[in-house]
Length: 319
Length: 283
Image (cartoon, rainbow over all chains, first blue to last red; front, side, top):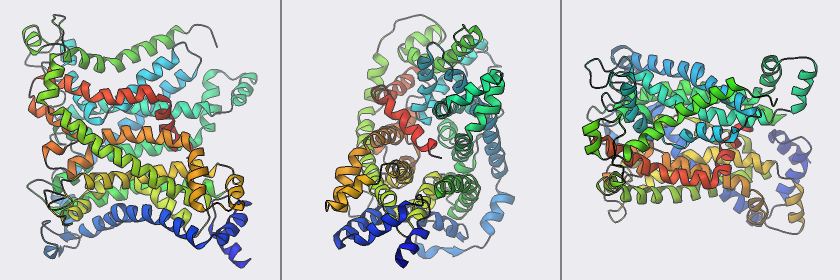
């Protein structure tokens, strides 16, 4: 019995009635069953440990060293110099931070709300709703590489659709949308939003379908109009999915990499923290310590949405 | 609710047009010979229209090789991910033991990290892992499919385990209780009871993973150095340099690359959307 209680207190997330029977079952397992379970847990855990957790820790470790990536014996301790260099003397650092913040703001204030709006509109009984959904969803299937290529055809200075529509194509004042460092961040963001909004729409549509219809009926009986019903009743009822969407938006803003790398390898107005990590890691000016310091900064910021999400998800399972 | 809403429809039609425009423009450009667009400009309706750009992009752009490479990476990676994730999910959701939740939390967290955080250590680990030249022409794990597959599996494992464990947790406990009374082994419970019942979740995740891995750009970019070993998504990026300003060829190459995802999406749309929302709704 003592063993049962210790097991059930550790086994917090399963609902209260179950652990006792489960724990008993655990003890009843034969040796070969325990071995099978051990392998089922052991192999995936080993894969995660070797390829995710240990590299994450090594990143932290390498950020305090100076190393050229050749022999392991060349690793020298460097204290905080990599961080000092990144923050004080590395020209693209602050632009990258600014771009990441703009990226986040644009996703949070434009792309995600647009996805929500599409979902709310399409959740009504509208003729052709399925067709519209498929259209908005199509870019989600494309890789960001293809998004970059497709929009290059729109943005190209003389050949692109946009300048042809604006009538500036072939003229000296034609804007090179992906090339001009004053506008290329915004051009890349529009292309990103094209994909992001469809993704958010799908998630939110699923959430809206899960809202108890009697809530809306009750609101309608109480005389609420459509706007009031949405903001006072439906939106608050969707708190769980709202949090998921906030987390996804934050993480997407931190992970942004592919599209700027495809456009111009993340230079000339498109510097992002994730790209600077890679630029310091590969290529001629290989400075693993600095790259790792930047990676650690990226890690620390990413942990905010990750931990928020995990606490929410697993605390709920706890109940 | 049924009165016509012209404003709403107008909004949706305009948005749909904006959404489709880049895709239709790509398709249109790809159907026109470079000679025609050079002469009349890209913004023109002059023919001829044909598929020459597609055949040219296919042969000159090395696309068959890239496609085969994508299959070499995607198929084993998806099978391994789903296999390992289902076993882990089974063990954490159907049995209660010390650290099962801790491990699940760590698995889930791993999937959410920006991949660039892990890039330097993984690159160096693979560079310093010697491999016989019979297995790898670089003499290390770099420039091999093993490296890409291993990291893709590790990275997707967290998400799949999380989704599958939620799904398996919701399956009634009596199912395996009864099997246990009948003396069924743990492996039998997994392979004969839980896995068949999890088929909807497995199908959804499998479809989602195929598209995600096919679309992945970063890991092959980091680990694969020989151009002829790149998968299609990373390889198609080099078309931009190779075809220089020939936007017609680039458009054709891009269109060809979309076809497999489009086919999978049309055939398995339900699973794909279910896969996307599975993870989110449990939050």
